[in-house]
Amino acid sequence: GAVVSQHPSWVICKSGTSVKIECRSLDFQATTMFWYRQFPKQSLMLMATSNEGSKATYEQGVEKDKFLINHASLTLSTLTVTSAHPEDSSFYICSVGRGGRNEQYFGPGTRLTVT
Amino acid sequence: AQKITQTQPGMFVQEKEAVTLDCTYDTSDQSYGLFWYKQPSSGEMIFLIYQGSYDEQNATEGRYSLNFQKARKSANLVISASQLGDSAMYFCAMRETGANNLFFGTGTRLTVIP
Image 1: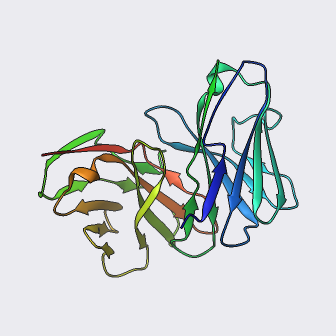
Image 2: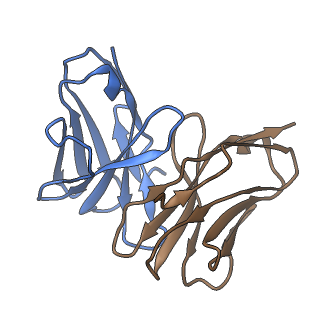
Image 3: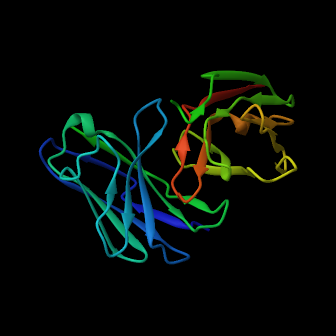
């Protein structure tokens, strides 16, 4: 069964509104979760590392005030896209690393379309 | 410099034939991990195979095998007996020492022809 879930699987919102995406680790507690973004026909790019109980670590070029990350518990991280613009339309995928060599689990992704 | 390079934007293979998807990597770490993922049109990332930098043998998982050439810094994926369901994007990725996140290549779109 699924190890990581994401909700919603797709969302359409109007420009200027905010959208929250949830990432849940179903099988184990995760002190660290990762948020990736994938534009059409492109690769996955790491946006930020979500740390339970502390501030997220953002990659260079990612606006922390625009992409708010909250890792409130050991099984839940949320990504909020604030004041969304059409250029934020993308596929957002979270992942959970368990520390083992090949245990990197991805959620099913959330497709965001901003109109 | 790109950490992961996939030079084949697209590949075609006849059903039941084998195909090799290329991947080269760049790291100064001695300990690292290499991954291949399959991404069908639905978008989910499906883990296929893993190779550790210290693994002496090439990794195999069913029809998937990884041709690991450490000196050349290459980690090519070999899919044997291709099936129509293998048509998808394939991403090579690397995890470096002390990190849990992955660096991805640009991907290769594989199309299996009946």
